[in-house]
Length: 149
Image (cartoon, rainbow, N blue to C red; front, side, top):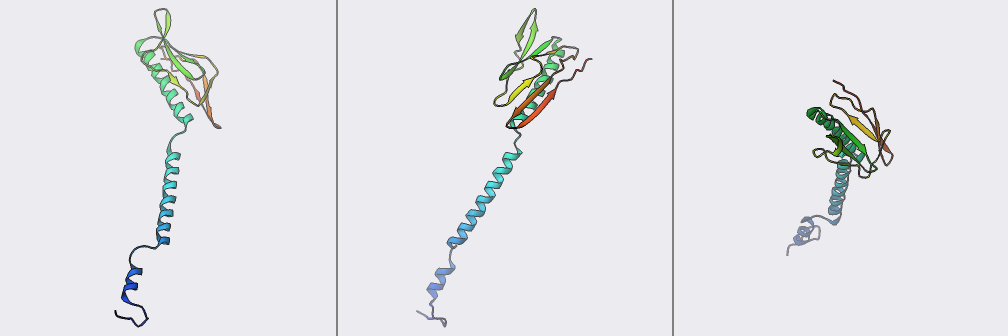
């Protein structure tokens, strides 16, 4: 075995130069953990809240009802219940649940309206209403508008 001038042999120098130290591995694991937590936070922030999501659904439901009413030349009603809203269509002399537009459930969002029933006529008339959505301190309002033609 050859002895170097420093007093060490070649084998011990080879042992220290191969692989990573425990501290290096821990630093890499910590950095990966921090990056992963930041990525999950940014993904959660990009997802719309329950209030915004329900607002979009209600607005599109109302527009669909207006289009349906004008297309089939039948008046419609939008009834608010405690946890859902339902579309009704006038068939002959009775109001029946609409088979095309589904019942929209509110889930965990609290929904209130200044009217119990929104009437929609084929000429574009819609009952003036203010619909308030709220959850966990976040709130939003939908106001209906008449588009008579």
